[in-house]
Structure formats: structure tokens, C-alpha cells
Length: 302
Image (cartoon, rainbow, N blue to C red):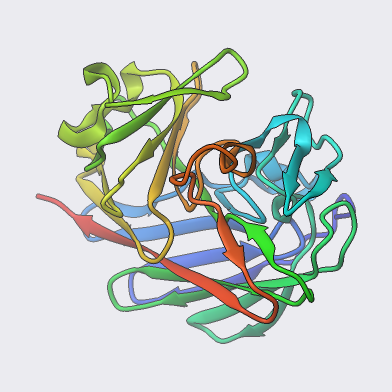
């Protein structure tokens, strides 16, 4: 994306407003809720005009994850006897979040309440042709995002996908989600050991995000998470379908946001799949598709 050039697709319905920035990683720039008692509230961390102008993908409200989520160790893995090596895409030692977030998408359809963004990937270091679409629809009670990927190669493709939303982190905010598995990580946020969630980091009974620092994948997620902002009298329910059975929770120190990411695969799934059957790695056959939906439904409280 060239600095200063910003294409925004705006959708609105009833008390909801959505802004998309296709050329900046197929991202969401803003998702807002007109609270009956408090005016417009940002349900996702809003992207500033300055961040959009300079093409700062790490400052957006949400971006898609494809062809895998989280980290791939040193960007290397072997699939069906073929060694695949991807160029590093961050300052860290591992490839992060795939490549969809760092490439422009096309808006191929838009109405006042719906839009479709498309990424057509041609074989390169990732040696598979595929097309991914994000289909956004503002309904009467929330936002639905359908993710659809079609393998256009003549060979099976390993795959993982999901969304990376950034939520406002307020002093009283709590994240609640039913999970039963937890991946401990090392200093490079790579998986070490699969266990039960530690009490201090378990979102099952409500996690006070203002008081925690973490970056971990939860497994056996029941595909529903609730974010409460008591001081804003607002609640947001996030649900997922299909393969999105992993919830990554990222709470960095000293920031005004946190992430709760509905994804299909654990960290470094493509390498761990050689020794485990529960990594969430999908294998999409030639001409086949994989899909999922994520919904975000706000509610005014009190």
C-alpha cells in the first residue's frame, strides 16, 4: 500500500457502522455501536487516520489470518515430502500470521450493508494457488464475517485461517470463554507443552484483561467468547463456526488493547502435525474449499 492512499469501504445498518480497508491487508478499520445511552462506542480498537495513511497494518482494528495463524517456526516446514521455506515477515525469528495481512485485497462487491474482499494468491514461496474471500454482512443485531478459501492448485494444500481482532482494553474489561486446553510457550511464544489452563489465565470464569499479560493458544474452545466493558455498559458476544476451534489470547504489557483470535490452528501447527493429530492444520484438496463464520453481536447493558 502506498503511503497516503487509503480506500475505505463503509457499511452501516441501524446502530452499527463498519469501515473496511481492502488495500491494507483486507483489514477492518472501525466497528462501532451506537449505544442508546452512550453514543458511538468502538467495539474494536479504531484505526487512526495517520495509521491508515502510512499503511500501518499493526494498528488496524482486525486483519485476516491466512494461510496459517500465529507463528511458523523459522518459516519452515515439510509437507508431503516437500520442504517449504517462507521469508521472515517480522523482526522476530519466525514467520507470523501468514501473508494475507501484508498484502492488498480487492473489494469485489459492496452494498450499504455488505461487502466482499478477495485475495488471490499465486504460487511463490507459498507454493499453492488459492483464493480467499471475506464476506461481511451487517445484520439487525451484529456483524457476520464469512471466511471462504478455495485451493486452486493441482495438489493438496496445508492450511490454517482465522481473524486477528483488537479489542479495547479498559480497566474493568473481562473476557469469558469456555476452553479446556492451554499451550504453554517459551520466550519466543512458541509452543512447549499442552496442559489444562492455569487458574490465573483461564477465561472460563472471566479473565480481567487489565491485570494480565499473556500470549497463548487455548484449545477445545466452545466457539463463543464474551467481552464485557462494565464502565461502558456494553457487552460483545463473539461466536465462530467450522474449524475455528482455537482461541488465541494476546494481552501485551502497557497497551490499551487485547486480542481474542478465533483461529483454526495452534502455533506452529504445520510442524507439530508430524507428531500430533490435534494441531488444527487443514488439508484442502485441489479445487476444494474450507469455510467458517465469525459473528460479533453487541448488547447494551443496564
